[in-house]
Length: 223
Image (tube, rainbow, N blue to C red; front, side, top):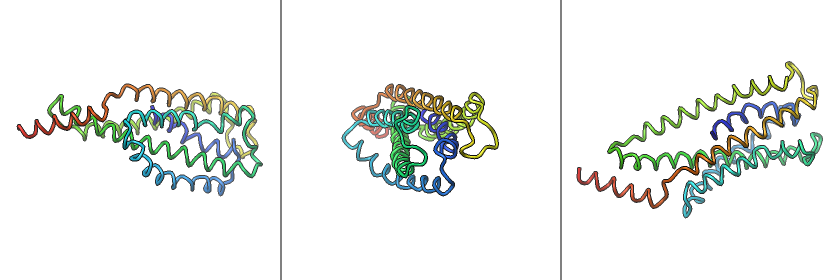
């Protein structure tokens, strides 16, 4: 579900940067530069935030932040509370937003991978088999499949709003651009909210994981 939100956003972001914000190629390159720092920040924050907290709780908060922050600039523009395209503040503010947003996405991926790893011992306690390869292969397969959903959904969205073909920035009717935002914002919020609900069903706490490790260790010793 999180990958669905990310897939839709990753495909539509080109349309937003080119036609909605009317950035040039060099400005889009500058905008993407901030993402490199996102990876460093996420790798630094993820283990520290979960050091004394449950992974599930942190993951839920991260996804809630994603649901709120990812569509925020578009929502503010649609409601008339954001910088105009000719403002000198537009690019720096969107760079900051992109940096925070991609940091959140990477942190979510790290937390989900860690939570999947904890399922291995929980499963082994029940089945007697270690299936980490199966779990991570399933996770990777699901991400790839639903990420492709972004391309499919984007085609549908562009068809619904009758987005014109072979047009330059500034030539797309404002009504069409607004409709693009009206569809994008709720779609992303719905997927992230569904991801939060799904994560709330995760029941492996730190205490349960410690118990699982002890049980698996004892079974290995007896074997």
